[in-house]
Length: 126
Image (cartoon, rainbow, N blue to C red):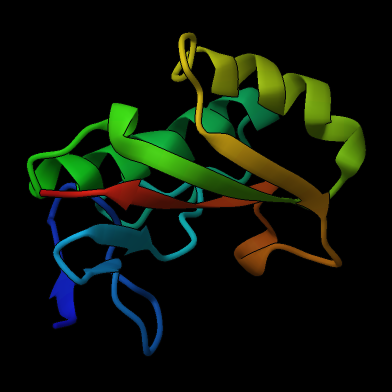
């Protein structure tokens, strides 16, 4: 049975979607922008700092369900500019140093709100 997830430790959904959903086995996050839990967009920060903020949001959602980044099976990363990949990857590696999840990274026409990237995750839950 589907259940929606909400935490005050990640930004509110800015449209008709949930921060995440679960069926009790898998958890799917919505795309996370580099926004603080208070809704401040960090679009003027470096790609590395934006990456860290996005992953901290994913982490907050997982922790609200008793999970962690270690539970992530798959990450999808949407970059405004694929030339930012190396800077993104360096910051991303800080969060996934051992046994990283599967990942896709692609350049898109434009990430919402002018951010450099957006990330989403699929994780296991108990």
